[in-house]
Image (cartoon, rainbow, N blue to C red):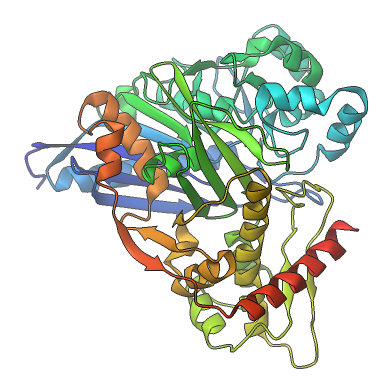
Amino acid sequence: MTKPVTKPAILALDQGTTSSRAIVFDGHMNPIASAQSEFAQIYPDDGWVEHDPEAIWQTSLDTARAALKAAEDKGYAVTAIGITNQRETSIIWERKTGKPIYNAIVWQDRRTADICAQLKQRVNEGDINEKTGLLLDPYFSATKIAWILDHVPGAREKANSGGLAFGTVDSFLIARLTGGGRHVTDATNASRTNLYNIMTGEWDDELLEIFNVPAAILPKVLDCSADFGTTTPDIFGRPIPIFGVAGDQQAAAIGQACFDAGDIKSTYGTGCFVMLSTGTARLRSKNRLLSTIAYQIDGAPSYALEGSIFIAGAAMQWLRDGIGVIDDAGQSGAIAGAQESNNGVYMVPAFTGLGAPHWQPDARGAIFGITRDTTRADFVRAALESVCYQTHDLFTAMAQDGVTPKSLKVDGGMTSNDWLCGFLSDVLNIPVERPEIVETTALGAAYLAGLKTGLYPDMQSFKKNWRAHSRFAPNMDENIRAQNLEDWNAAIGRVTAG
């Protein structure tokens, strides 16, 4: 029998690259119910990565309903929804029916590398960077959109006449949740498309022309904490307002209370994303890091400097599902920790190219130092170490831009691995802090929705309540650290040299 509902709560939909999750948070921002469902990854060609939008929708819907029911059974009433999503992943659908015209092209997808190379020959990448904070790379949404419009028969004509809608995953979910009633996104997701001017806060006509994207398909851009519409009653049995949206990395930064200039977090999921808050001032990197909108409240954007690594947890997934080296990613810490060293084995997991600061979409993965004595444990440790070395590459770029963090907040599924967190601290040579609530991405989305309802406190009060669960301090001999980094740089150099 369902208990009487008396306590307010927030439902966070966390739509990620490999799974969809739903978590309900109570009035004190504690998780009280959750559900998760993985979905298939589609690899049609070399460097191509797609998702079935219907699988994204169905897993999001199923997990949301399951978490909502579990919360209601405990006597909670969900008063609002927050959404966070894999960024840059691009979907185009029919406005009238909501039916996608092609699979979602995932942020990891490299199919438009040649298009980007051609654009670099005829436009000034610096001008694009000045407007968007981004680079000319297939990572971002613009060339994905153009590719779909140019490869689905009749799509471009239909787009020009207003019959199609484009969105990142948040927009697609909102369209479905509202029965097609709203076509909206937030400033953080818009800032990852290469079509949005992060200084003027508008879709940019010049960028639309460069990338050949019609304005008619674009969503309206709102603040991160805003009215994104209300779910139709048939979805959850009653209408529920959607009051918060942010891309997953920005949501994680919000969940980690990175509101002030200098605050920094790194999320370790499918990929790894380091985000440094720069406050109301935009920092222009000279070392191929990205400027992006961290969040936007009451029309005022706050900026961040970001480094994006495409493969982190995905390397462990490859070891498990691709070559069967491990049965469970949870084994990896114990396996790596049992090794006295990496035995000279280095993995460069450029499975879908290299992100920051290298930006080489055509690079491919490699493992160096294999001998007759190499074991599966060496592969596991090399994969984990690669995540830390890639993070160090980002910190080196930040240092060259004049920013030297003194500590790092971490989150994401991989950070449940104590060995990884400890080795990360050793490589960066700074303390690493893991929060009490590690589901910071979902927490950030919930916080944005709860902020609008008044259930959750203002940002500075939220920041004061942030607590570290674990703290890892560097404990590696400096000579070993220097040698490891030298060997890693040699491995990266061989991959980037082609």
